[in-house]
Length: 419
Image 1 (tube, rainbow, N blue to C red):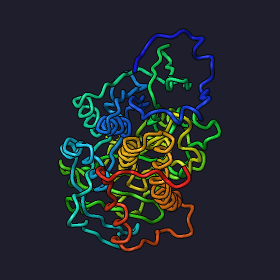
Image 2: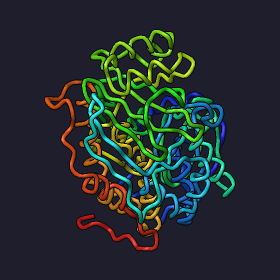
Image 3: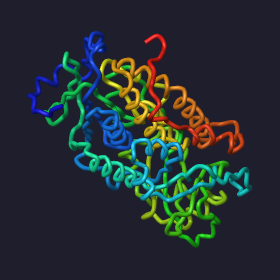
Image 4: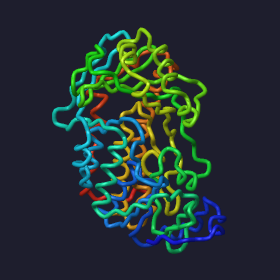
């Protein structure tokens, strides 16, 4: 693998020029990879590829690691198990706060269902997104994964020797494979398929914040609360005693992220307080939250089914192909699962087209089913559903297929039929 300077004429070949890959698909086993994107999926993919005997470098568009970026997220037991397969679970557990239980209620405060977690599984861990980024990046770097920052991908082309990525700073890099871990607005997705769908807006703007520990809202430690009704709010008690909450503001014509950022926090907070007036416990949580504690996350989005996950020597992983929206509680966990599964397929199937096909066959049914469920919840949050409160299956039925999913790293992957 190498990085070299190139002149602008190299970039004029077109960002989607990936020709002649039919013959190259029969080449020898991949030994090197370019991983585009340094969020969640990128470092995990590079770690897993390294464990599979494939040297990978992570290329990130931003000039530095993602410190101070993003709100809170939950990493479910299945995501932690996937991290354990590549030895990366311990540093993530160290920065998380365990929240194994779930209570669901309506907007008047009446309980609907309660779940204490599966005793045989580790708890879901909550953490600010930036802590997860940092933990994964530091662990991958310590394991020998190289990171290159300030590398915004603008194009890629296949040659007889592999695939070459071109970056906005005029440099390029070549390897056997290119892996798009570049998020919901993936450039790699459009290189693979210029007609690929765009992210789908979920009907609400997402916000988060902190309420004082003594705000009068009951929230036992280790329990995530979800309150549905005319408006939705989730909350839990953090390690410092404060209540951490997340909520949605239904908007039919959503502003851009830049426009959201330009609105003063006090103005957003006033709109939320108006929406959640009379909501239990939203009204009280918002009353005890100040503008300085508000996080304006922006549009809640998901990826609809992406027809083409791979083309030639390029393949997608994580949110670039299956962002299920925050309503699933599975975004980070699914991205980690896919990164590990992709590496396992490339380890065992010497022809990368067979490996990509096996990877898609293993992952597409699971991630699309979770995405459909999240989309149904999004409609409730946006007030677009006939049911103000979703009809939930039992927690056992709801969480078992999510949390018990495991990737057996030691199990060999077989080529799917017909490939």
